[in-house]
Image 1 (cartoon, rainbow over the protein chains, first blue to last red):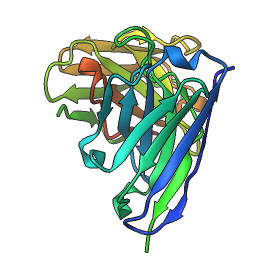
Image 2: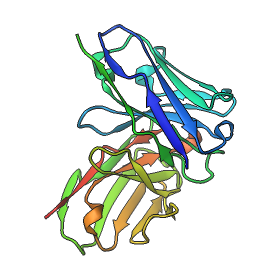
Image 3: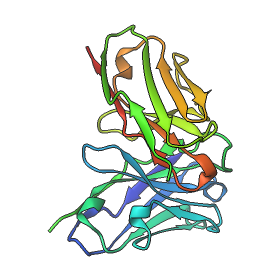
Amino acid sequence: EVQMVESGGGLVQPGWSLRLSCATSGFTFSNYWMSWVRQAPGKGLEWVANMKQDGSEIYYVDSVKGRFTISRDNAKNSLYLQMNSLRVEDTATYYCVRAWAKPGTGPPLDHWGQGTLVTVSS
Amino acid sequence: DIQMTQSPSSLSASVGDRVTITCRASQSISINLNWYQQKPGNAPKILIYAASSLQSGVPSRFSGSGSGTDFTLTISSLQPEDFATYYCQQTYGARTWTFGQGTKVEMK
């Protein structure tokens, strides 16, 4: 069974940093692009970042560029999101999501974790 | 950046109704359009990818159509478990992705 388990969320003050982790199992992690998607309380979905299998391609939504860094450890089947200079508007549930093996082939976001809540407040 | 606009934002329907949700892209995205369903307290679930391909395990009452800038998600006969929020998403260029704002399907 494909599983993604996020951790690392919590309550932080504006300007602080937080690192999210995502432990995966049930599939060959190194074969897939991975993504982070977030959802502010009561709001819609927002794609945050994508990372190719070998890390050679990384993309971010404009609002987090320069502040967030996506990374992965294929040996540990894990995905990370380093979030610096956090803002109140970054408050959201952050989902770790399996993307596709190859762009344009099959469903792009087919397995989601249950999410971890990040709250940025003073 | 490509913007995605869904309509309506919400709708009320009854079990057995045919429901249609539309999604418009700000520029042509070919068929790089996907649909997700989200129920309260749960992670989203993919229904349709590449505009019209049904994800494995998704009931055949769900269908998608369109290409270019205009897309449609249709539920042919609404079931009780289909009351949820639906999102479209573009994956054109496989680089930066965007979701529509969502359509909440409520019971009439």
